[in-house]
Figure 1 (tube, one colour):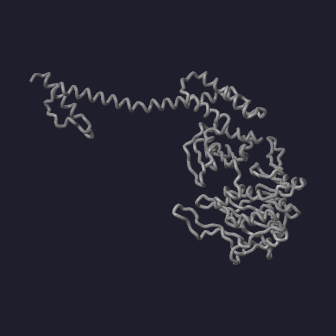
Figure 2 (cartoon, helix red, strand yellow):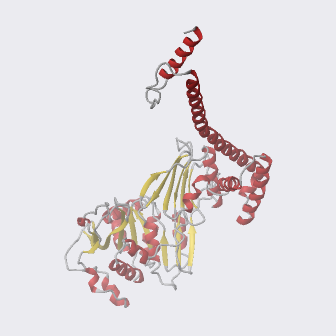
Figure 3 (cartoon, helix red, strand yellow):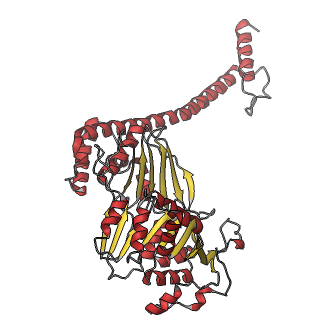
Length: 493
C-alpha cells in the first residue's frame, strides 16, 4: 500500500470517529477500509446537513433585527412627530376629532420621510401604536379598552399590573422609558385642568369616561413615575346588576330603596377598592327625579341618572399656591343652592363636620362614603374626621352629632375570592351613655364556607331585628314587606 492510500485511510477513520456520540451513527459498522469514494459522499452529505442547520439557526437573529428596526423606527417617528406638533398637542381649542386627523396627516409625512419599506399590516400597526403614544395612553390603551379589566397599575415604566375579577396579574407590557410614561401622565392631567411637576408631584384626576386616575412622580416616587387607573364602566351598575352579581340580596335592595325614599341619611363604608362609589351610584338611583341633587367630589366619578343634578368638583392650588377650593368650601356653598339631597363622594377631612351639620339642619336624605372596615369603625372614623375640622369639641358632643345625623351604615367589603359584597346594613339607634348604639339588620353569613374554587357560598341574611326607623316608613306611606327582616332575634352592638 503506497503512502497516499495510507493517508486517505487514516483521514477517513478520523472523520468517522469524530462524529458526536449522541448521533445515531449509521457508519458504526463500516469497516476501516471504506472506499475513498464512499467517504467523499458521506462528507458531502454531512456538510449539506450542517449548512441547512446553520440556515435555520440564523433565521431567528434576522427576525429579531427586523423587529428591532421596527421599534427603532417607531421611536424615531414618535420623536419627529412630537417636534412637528409642538404645543398643538395640548391645545384645548382643538376638537378631539380635528386633533386626531391632524396627527394622522403629520404622521403619514413622518413615516414617508423615513423611507423604510413596510408591509400594509406593519404600517397600520406602526401608525396605531404611535397615535396611542401621542394621543392615547400608550401601551396601556388596550387595557383601558378591555371591559374585563377593572384597574391598571403602572409601578414603573417597565412593570404594569392589571386587575381582572378581583385578581392582580403582571403583564408583559412596558413603556419605552420614564419620559414616555411621564408624557401619558401629563396628557391625562392637563385635560382636566390639573398639573403635575416637581413642585406638585402627585395628582388625582379622571379620564373622559369618569375613570379615576392617581399619578405620582419623582422625587416622591423613588422608582420613577407611577400611575394608577381605576376604570369605570360605560354603563353604571344598577341595583338589579348588583343583585345578579351577588353583591346585594333582593331583601337588602328593598330596605335600601325604602330608606332613600324616606330621606334617611346613609353612609357607605368600606376599604379601598371595595366598590363604595359604585354602591353610592346604585343608591342614588332611588332618589326621586323631582329632587334637586348637589354632588361634591374631589374628582368627578358619580354617574347619577337624574336630570336635576348640580355637579361640583374641588380644585387644588395653582403654581403660586393660591386658588384652592376644598371639599369643605363646596359643602358650605351647597347649602345656599337649595339642595334636596347632598351627595358627597367621600368625606376624608374637616368637611365631615359641615356634612353632619347639614344633615342635622334639614338636609335629610344625604349620602356619602367613608373609609372604614366595619360599621363600628365607620362611627370612629367620622368622629376623627370631625375633630380634623380644627374645632375644639368634646368627644361626647361629636358623638351626639354623629348619632343624630346618620341613620344607616351600609358596609361593603372585597372578600378573598375577589367578589365585593355588602356585609352589613346597620342602623344607628342613638346614644347610650357615651357610646353610639348600633344594631345590624343584615349581616353576611361567612359560616357557609367556600366551594372548590374558593368562592364564598354565604349570602347576606337578616338578623330578625326590625329597625326602629321602619315606623317612619308607615308615616310616609312607604311599604316594606315584613318578611325581609326574617325570624326575630337580637343583635345589638
